[in-house]
Amino acid sequence: MEDITRLTGGQGGENEKLIFKVLRRGLGDPVEAGTSLSELVDLGLRFDLTVPLTRFYGNNHAALPLPFRSFQIGPVWRAERPQKGRYRQFYQCDIDLIGEASVLAEVELIEATTEALATVGLSGTTVRLSDRRFLSALARSAGIPEGAWDGFFIGLDKLDKIGWDGVRTELVEQRGLPASAVTTALEKIAGLQGLDATKVADAIASTVPTLDEGIIQDLATTTGCLDQIATARELRWEFDPTLVRGMGYYTGQIFEISHPSTSSSVAGGGRYDRLIGRSLGKDVPACGFSIGFERIVDLLEQAPRRDVVAVLYEAEVPVADALAMAREVRAEGRTVTVIRRAGKFGAQLRRLETWGITSFVHLRADRDPHSRPEERPLGQQPQT
Image (cartoon, rainbow, N blue to C red; front, side, top):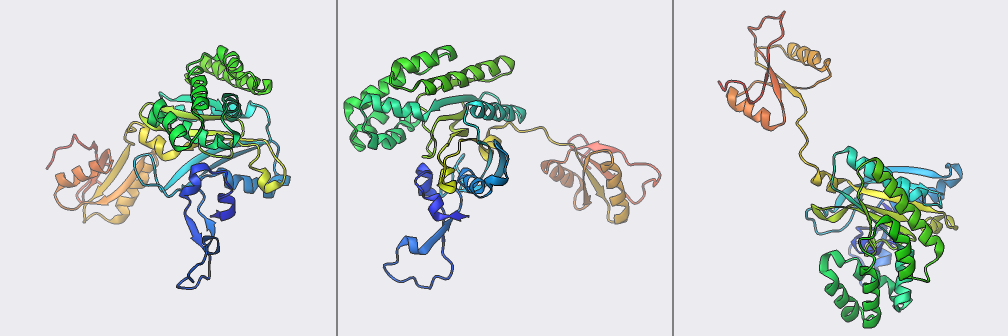
């Protein structure tokens, strides 16, 4: 749980609407009429691991190395409507680099995350890259009022779900943005899609002439590094000017990893240089990447069954003998489960197979105590 004021600081984007809020202790029952929500709630369940990390760093920075590399795996909660790929409780696997101002942070995090996904067997992914500073400069150059940028970003973030016409309709008719400015911005964004690594910097500079040279150079460095990594191992990436990321705390480059089998990202992150300042009182450069554990599991092909041996013993066999046999098999580095024989033999073997057991050893009272019973694979034994 986190302090509710930390979770609702305006940096969590749409996720702030999905916070599970926790009632204060000691409230009377019933609550008096007219009591405000702020009087009822003082804590909430965390919706990500980044906000708690910034609190931890703010409290302990004097004792931590700089840069500080953080690894976290833990549950988070969002008041979602449960469905495939969206859960009320799920695990995030986070890596963050705090105190590194250069794009070393972005490239290192992207490289580590893509290598981790490849290691667990997830193929066919694509890294999508953009920059919040670029998006802000583009919105300004197109004539969108600064006070309306957040709404523009939220609408643009829905492009993959509602298409260009849907985004234009939402921005103009629902959010009231100037039609000419929206058209100009969307045309600029469309012209930047599908760029080669060598053309990203020039295309951005041409599209948004007012963009700071340092931002362009940062993107050029990141894309160049990704291109170099792609020559050493399989890595697909693209500059995607439609990528926004929902969190309000991002201040620079942002990235997601997509997979063709799902419309939701399997990992995402970016730079959040001002978030730690809320706890520490001064800004600290920071960047992070988060993997959605359950989404990865959903996408992975079914793994081969482990070699699991059942020691199946008859009622007349001493329990000590069954356990001794199990220890002998485990000493070979294998997984063993001890199960008492019951019911029809063939039916029990079929149940063992559905439980993921691959073979069995049948201990009978009349066996030779000096020899090990034959191990038989499930699915090939006679059904007697």
